[in-house]
Every structure is written in structure tokens, then in C-alpha cells.
Amino acid sequence: MGQEEPDLYRDTWVRYLGYANEVGESFRPLVPVPVVWASYGVATAYVTADAIDKGRKAAAAHPQDPTRVGVAVVDTFVWQSLASVAIPGFTINRLCAASLALLGALTRWPLPMRRWTTTALGLAAIPLIITPIDRTVDFLMDSSLRKLYRAPGEPPTSH
Image (tube, rainbow, N blue to C red; front, top):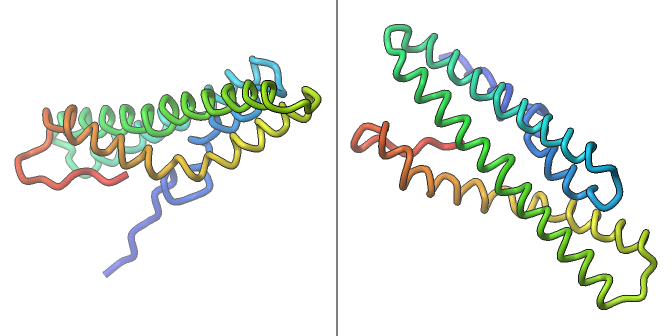
């Protein structure tokens, strides 16, 4: 029995490219806005590459079933877009904005110190939000989109 090949987009360092926009949002108080938008470009490229990869794998496994290919691409793209880009990006953005505002209201720290503290808080929050967001997106998709294309009794897709 052969060992399963690791998934490039889920089991290697490449996975961290999906978190580029959270890092960008954390650094928003310190860097020009185009740098933040570039981080979203990196994360979106990761999401797109993973969706294409899953489509290619579905095509290889089921060459006579283009529906499976479409489902693999759509499911991966929607899941990754929500779990890796949209929800975590919004979460870190709001956390950092609130932190910067609170530090401004509650401390007399100079602005550079408030900005660096906000960035540190954003970076520290990234590992804490990943699993809850992933599980929430699994639940949302299992309760909605996946009902359209999953066979009855089929277990949920794990990301």
C-alpha cells in the first residue's frame, strides 16, 4: 500500500500563502495601502491555484464526469475564498482598527507605538482565528451550497 502524496496547497509551506492577506491587514497601520492590496492578490492567487489543482485532480480521477470537476473547483474556490481570504481578512481588519482606536483613546502612547502594537495584535490573532473560521465555513457550506451537489449520506468535505 503506497503512501499518499502530500497536497501541495494544504500540506506544505504553500498553505501559508493563503494567509498573506491577514498579514497584510495586520501591517495596514504601517504600510501603504497598495501593499495590503498586494497581500490580497497573493492570497487570491493561492485560492485560485488550489481550486485549479483540485479540478485537475477530479478530472484525472473521473475523466468521464465533468460535473465532478466543476464541483471540485467551485467547492474549493468558495471554501478557500471564505475561509482564507474574506472572513479572516475582515476579522483581522476590524480587530486592528478597533485596537488602534482603543489604544488611541486609552493610552498616551505615541502613534508609532500604537501602530506597532496593533500590528503585533493582528499577527498574534491569526493562529487563533484559523480553526474557528475553517469550522464555521465547513458548517455554512455543508448547510447550504454543498446540499446542492453532495449525494445523500455522503460525509462533509474536510479542508
